[in-house]
Length: 174
Image 1 (cartoon, rainbow, N blue to C red):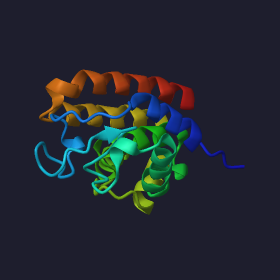
Image 2: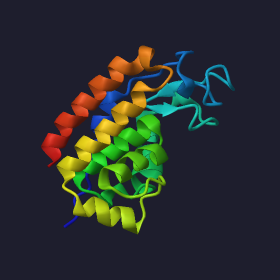
Image 3: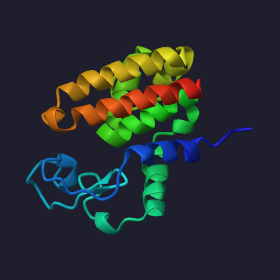
């Protein structure tokens, strides 16, 4: 019997994500993906204007956000194929940094080419690697990546609290 972990994982993810925000310093809040580029439409439930430029972010419901996460992150990434601890880390990383970037962290953690597409070779390597090792390596790459971002000074402490909580979740998932 396959257990659908998405409902548990989405509740966790949404515990990290707040209500509506339109912080002008956050590139995700702009439809162009860069501060000052496009329209300032904001972010709600982690659904951001840079990823969904035509969406009415301010009036987005939780149910609509969950449906987007299921379709565009969980199902698109086929995260149900991964060990639970790894699947949640990839989901959360994809929401913060995009699915291709998060996939590259996971591919590096598994020792495969990091092209941002989890195909059969990557999947086999992921399944052959201890999930704990994947979680540690994935988050090490994620942290190194985030510390190089221009808005680290503004958001860095929050990102690190999020990753710390994700490591606690990984302990529950293994």
